[in-house]
Amino acid sequence: MAQTVVRKCRNPKCGKEFPSKTSRALYCSPDCNRQFHRDKHCTTLTFNIGNIRIQINDLTPGTDHAALQKSIIDSLPTELIEQAHMLELPEGAEPYHAVVNN
Image (cartoon, rainbow, N blue to C red; front, side):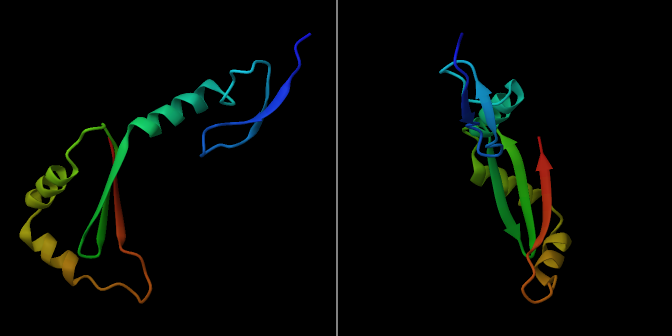
């Protein structure tokens, strides 16, 4: 009979312990495996426009971040960019956060 070994899931977002029946098991579930590899191969672009933080998730590797950031800023109306720079935050507060998921 095979010996069961308790392992820790390799996915840093999970990390839970699971019973492994083989020496090759690295993840607690197929979903955890897929999520780890998806996160590993996708990137995130984060930048600020004044006091507004823009975050774009799930970019494919090789995406030119500088060109993407420039095209986003260029597509915004000048009035919006000016308002973002004039926006006052409470002391010690983080910038407002806008998240885009592909």
